[in-house]
Length: 33
Image 1 (cartoon, helix red, strand yellow):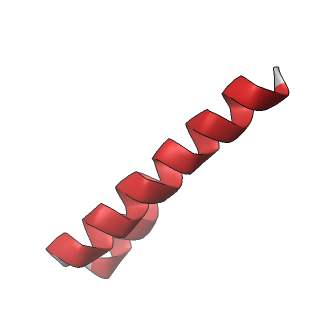
Image 2 (tube, rainbow, N blue to C red):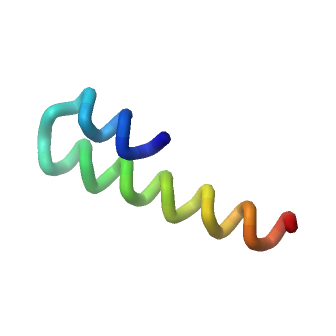
């Protein structure tokens, strides 16, 4: 999901933000499940 947002940004900063969102989602899922 974050990767798509980063790609839409079309910038390296956007990709970094997308990666951070993916990492947060993974952490959230690991804690929830």
